[in-house]
Length: 243
Image (cartoon, rainbow, N blue to C red; front, top):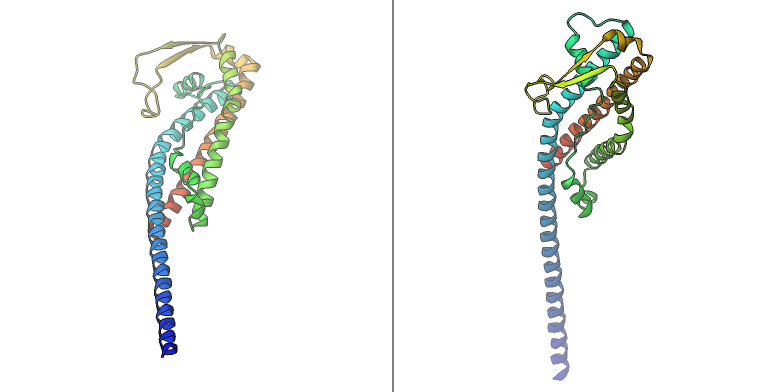
């Protein structure tokens, strides 16, 4: 009579082990599902923040690029006029702007708080979208290159501004402020100069030739940043649509 009872106990034990095992397995699956859901929600929050930051950056970047283009056109006007030996009619104001802003090569910060958090939390590495990861990497690497070379880029134009001291007299005037927010406002400074003296100086003529080239490079660099930011924003939005 004991043998059947022993066999029955083993069956109950096996059943209990089976129930406990699958109960633990189910619990682990629930935990994994919860972790995946929380991780996905965290990734989505990061992506939404990144979308907002890049969108705001691109809005301000349009004003910033307009300012850089204005400066480049004005500096090129000075260079072309010095080479030609005359200022074209109607371009006197642009020529004066070039004298005033020859050393103005401003930089614009790219928001990177969310990007840095994505990297620090390993969230970026877990994202499935390779195009998104590549777009972000190219964008921030390009902007970082611009920032690292910022001082080197300005050396020539700052030197030229100093060389202009014997030739140009600057004065303040009462006009609307000229800044990133009011890029089309007239300068708050004016310049008095002798075109004959400027055009007779090889130092100034050559300086503006290279300054024009520097401003062109600066515009090109930040236009590249703008294009990459546009690509990154499109990749972020594509990833958000998949969620």
